[in-house]
Amino acid sequence: MTIMPPGGVTVFVGENGAGKTNLLEAIHLCCLGKSHRTPFDRDMIRIGCKTSAVYARVQRHLTKDEVGVRLFSQQNMRKTIYVNGKTVPRIGELMGHMTCVMFSPEDMAIVKGAPQVRRSFLDMLLSQCQPAYFYAIQTYHTALKQRNALLRLLARDRGSPKQLEVWDEQLAKAAAPIVRMRQEAAMTLSDLAKEHYSFISGHEPEVFVLRYQGSLSGPKDPGEMLMDQLATSRLDDIRRLTTSFGPHRDDLRLVLAGQEMRSFASQGQMRTAVLAMRLAEINILTRAHRDAPLLLLDDVLSELDEGRRARLMGRLGNMQTLLTTTDLDTLAGMKPDCVLQVKDGQVISP
Image (cartoon, helix red, strand yellow):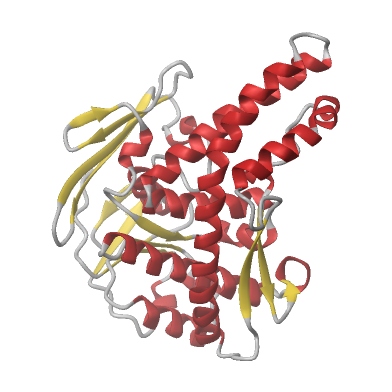
């Protein structure tokens, strides 16, 4: 199946389960090498099939790129990444060739979910902006996995505690740029999202801010701080079988009118906060690449009242947008450039 959407707004309309979200998921896969809703590649392969693949041609103002991803159901086979006709060895080489921002029902977890969801939000944004960040976070998690494995051995009186020093150094080296880039991104996100929230909600007194929270904040070098923390917590880490400090424990706090949103905000306030964060993400990616990302809206307009829906669409301007809905009536007032029907996994003209 090949789709060539126009530069404006393309609407995919169909019943629940028709396959609309699968289309957006395939595009997300081309941009980031992973799904927005599952960590398992096999979940993106049709039942009974051994492989699946998606390819995209991208034209920006100054560049043209071709990207693709092939997935395999067998666990011993790694996904294959293609960039401009060549197989690339690392997923990081995919980043930046095709960028997207996705609004989906799962986004509510950014506010309500665990810190891991908010860290992932930052990681995805920074990985699309700077491939160096993606490699740093990959290196960090590899070292973290090795350190935690060693902790489990030490708890069974196997190995030497001195071996931890090697992994402590690896963690500290990778952690320093991760923390610095996350802190800078959080400040930029906060400034942008604050203004977007005020505009979409129409309630100016409700000030929305984001605050990066972690053990490595302060004037001292993050890497040096982490080395000190890991040395101090070594015995506790062996007892608990896990690494107590580092950017894998950090969080992005969402605060509205001085209070933690996760604890008190209404559904409407949470949804507006997520939209404001996604709009800020668009701003940051546009600055980084001097071109707007592809916008993916997965059945989110139906969740907004008419006023917020109109203000949101007003903020999106002339971005190339792919939008899914079960009912065209939710698009009242909009004039899409193309409307396509999705039925039984196939895209057809209405």
